[in-house]
Image (tube, rainbow, N blue to C red; front, top):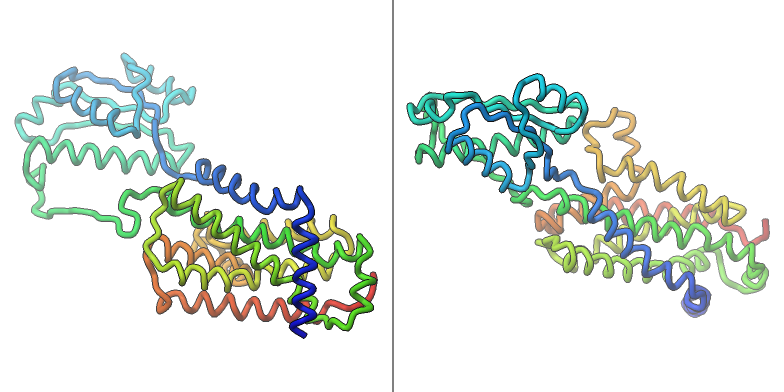
Length: 370
């Protein structure tokens, strides 16, 4: 049995590597996709366009504006002379927010009484507005503390309120998204390779040669799976190197555990592709079925949208995508440094998922044409 599988694996490697285009697509697309998504997929808000209406024109108000601009989050683009002009700028979408510093701002600060600042946001882009509001609160709070030199500015409260973010102290969305992009790239690569594996044998006419060999269906499925599993591992190493060295994503956990999680993840990823290949009659059908699975899998994985926010029915559907489990594993290892004691349920789920789907694929495969 092992000898037959060995020859089949060798045949698959020769078939894949002798194709120049396929060699290119095995290496270039994962890197290109990671570079593209790594830069584009981000919820960080920077250079928010701001209109400044400064009625105080004091040293204190200028210092506050300076801090706003030097943070990199805000850029003052307009200096309106009236509230009507502020409304017009917001209506036309020329600014995302407007800050009005009332006259008497500096006097109130010197008298140590609350000074008024009004910030108006364009709420049509709710995410940007919420994030920018958080930035402004932090900047104003820091300025207030620096002015008083005390822990509490207003004197109305004795609570020393401090916040701290664990695992991603700078709250960079790139640190959150890039590991998810890696997981989705590996899934897409595995599906692309395996979904056409058996269909291609039918179309190029080599299925007849397999039919006359003593190889069994399960051996054929293993022979088709092993080469693409090795390719999947190599692609994972490639995107891992780019993610860590280029995007500077910290990896706090164990590399061997990540390798174990990747191995478990490749089982269902390759198995689903082989299952598609046993269902489709042509390579075109296989690609369409692959997209039919991949796109919902991305939506349901928790990669972008929290699973807890989905309706209950769709939350149950998320268990049918291996991406859901691997995203927990890869983010846990990258950002939290989670160990096997925490991640074993996801790894076990992937192994069970993979064994089931590969077994079904082997049962569906029949050594006959059409």
